[in-house]
Figure 1 (cartoon, rainbow, N blue to C red):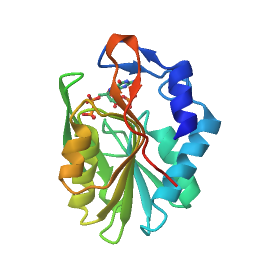
Figure 2 (cartoon, rainbow, N blue to C red):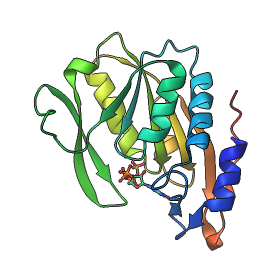
Figure 3 (cartoon, rainbow, N blue to C red):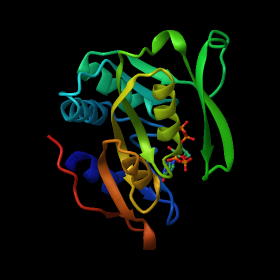
Figure 4 (tube, rainbow, N blue to C red):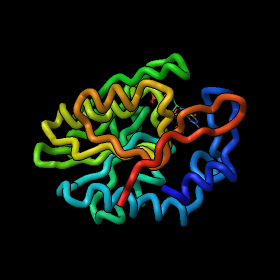
Length: 195
Ligand code: G4P
């Protein structure tokens, strides 16, 4: 997606050969115009999948996921990383291990909000090792619902997540694919053709 790639070039900061900081438009401050375009692009991508729900994991996935849900006119469901006062029982849960943070968290979604007739698009901001997206697919599976596709804003193609998910048969669409962050430079992989 050209606007996203331009934004990464203009405002992204390479912190190391593994980490790209995008706090100016995605992870901390959010560019709502870009998010709207991202949402519309994902909505077009998955328009023939009879999507009934968009699912993301708090917190940075919420902005692109909300705009996708809005464009598709379906609800957004946000998997929680912590149990909250109102989210305690009757949950679908999955364990997600973060290689980056070297910690395991349990993510959860209320059983009352995901059903076997749901066609779910999973949206997240980054795809690195794929553990967060995989955990979300497990939650969809527990509900006997269908994963209609996975939409990622920025995929780090030099890490294993994309291969892991695609090898499991999921349709993964990433709007920007980064081949390398070596030498302090963002090198993009081939552009993915999106409608
Ligand atoms: P994985 O889910 O693909 O396996 O990723 P990993 O555990 O390695 O990522 C842990 C967190 O770091 C995730 O956010 C992920 O989005 C983020 N992340 C991974 N690589 C990058 C990167 O290069 N740049 C940035 N900016 N973030 C990256 P999180 O802990 O869930 O945070 P948040 O969603 O609450 O903000």
